Image (cartoon, rainbow, N blue to C red; front, side):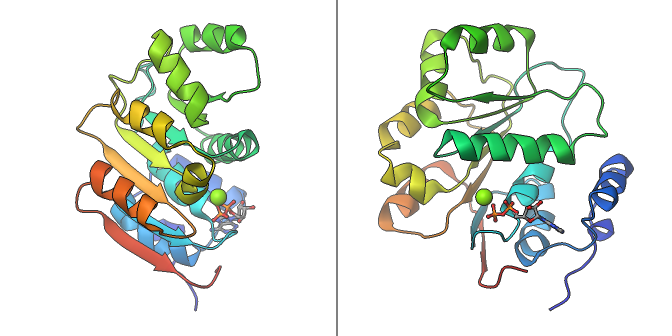
Length: 212
Ligand code: ADP
Ligand code: MG
């Protein structure tokens, strides 16, 4: 099925032009089904196979409406692994490359804390990381989420499989209640449903079978 073009979305021209230059002309199925709700500020619970384009769906949601002049963390993405966090950060930077001065920071375990703390002192608009390290920064007070307005859980089922539930619970305690929450998962076992019910408000459910 042919999906609509990105130009049907209420995105700023700089973002639309960039999508064209990246060769993103038409939305993928999950993007077409989720982006109108994401851009309207609704909570979205998304299920889609690998390669269905979930990163751009939540990435455009994070980048749209960002207050660049406020150098504070406004969006947080939690991923199960460092490799995924790096991929997600790279994709968000690509989507946002026409927005001057945007800062996307990755915070994952397995790397020294010192340089991460230094980067946090310089400020960032979007943070992408793994739950353990994000929790550590929150506990230390080196990461602050007062200005956070958008939370993304990517591959939620894998995060729970990897034993990140306690870290996630702790992180939720540091976040403003008034925020948009987007949760993506390949599967929806009970554990994911329980978390979704706790942290989301009347989520729009989007399920896509085919990749495009
Ligand atoms: P998922 O997280 O759903 O597994 P990704 O977000 O990693 O999938 O996207 C898979 C690939 O598709 C990436 O290489 C991405 O650049 C590309 N892609 C995403 N959306 C589009 C689009 N609308 N048009 C063309 N390519 C896209
Ligand atoms: Mg993905």
